[in-house]
Image (tube, rainbow, N blue to C red; front, side, top):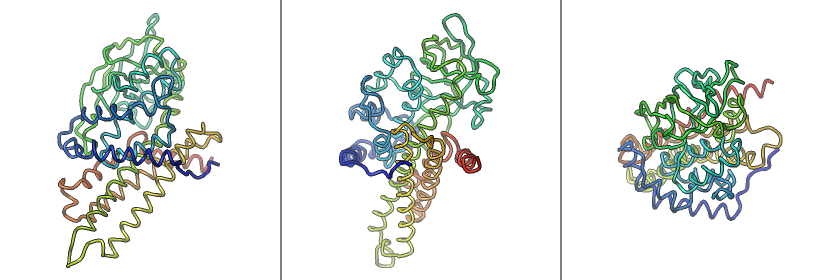
Length: 381
């Protein structure tokens, strides 16, 4: 069993540094980003300048080779002030995980340095209009043509659509339900089109769209893994990405609670601060306990990734961490809106944005209902 996680002094200092950066460079922009519902390029440039875009990648390709626990810390601190900005790191890493783990050395050397220094961003194209939770039902097809593959089909719910210039895409190469899917990396100019951008409840600074592959010609050298290995690659990738969605959820929840506690200390009713009301104190205390429990689960799942999952626990532990943390984020942010009363329901304060942003963490990278299926299968196997 993985031992409990105790952060190193270096990781604690890293958290302090990222928190200062987030509060100084990102937090002042968060409300406007949400209101405009536009990708914040200045926030992205700030991430590049702070070397945070290189944090997640191997050193030999220009990255910092940080552990996933350290990456979770960064995600949490960014999400604490702006969930949309935290997605800037998460989505490129999701798109690049199949490259890191299944790409050729030549392909890794070509694309990973570009992502590290911010010249490129990546998206992960798995879901389709009729193949969301059931990804093996996908219809997007890749047909071999000499040294290339020609991909045609439509993917939906694609984070960073239109911003990314690299798209990891899963396509059917035979009719076998699971073994007939192959993974590729495509450049946007090869035939990737954004047909629609969604209008969403939250994370409005991160575009989500419908992406169409129209006779997209991809060299076989840009195939990731073996032909027919795509479904296994997709599941392998999500197992290693879900814990950081949990970290995002923890950050959103922590940001809402921190703001609510400060507000309660300053807001006075009946001649005394709200914070003196024991009933409200207990709501805040419950929030703090849930956040800390979620954080521990997330760090444990991340540590399993760092340890190469020696006992094969990652699938279920990662599902638990993502599911629990995102449920906590939704409950905590809702409670924090309540703690602010009517003001919590307005966009004058950030907790309503955090409540809206928290909802997606229960949905993407596998709904929490799917996570519960994963957990239940392990229990009853």
